[in-house]
Length: 135
Image (cartoon, rainbow, N blue to C red; front, top):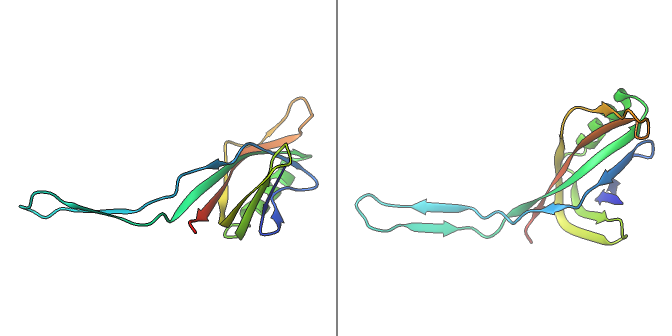
């Protein structure tokens, strides 16, 4: 499973990243409402769809220490503003693409923790956030 935006892969050969299904939101539409005092009725103007959010839940793991994990999270966040075609390959090796997409950021679900079983070592869960411009 891979997440690639404009040739940049959101994973690390040292650690691993597992991701859930992308959650694609509806396109945002702006509206302006007008009502004039003393006049019955009103007016609502709608814009064309402008952008939509794409959120991918991820779990980053297999780091030997917390500092290495935090460095990797910092490296992911440093990709803010990266734009191009977002490509996600799922477990069935199906590629899904979203053109005109920008990376907005990474939101942590909580603090990083050490997996007590020793299988996943240091772990951080969160969400990769993207925005796609309507075309």
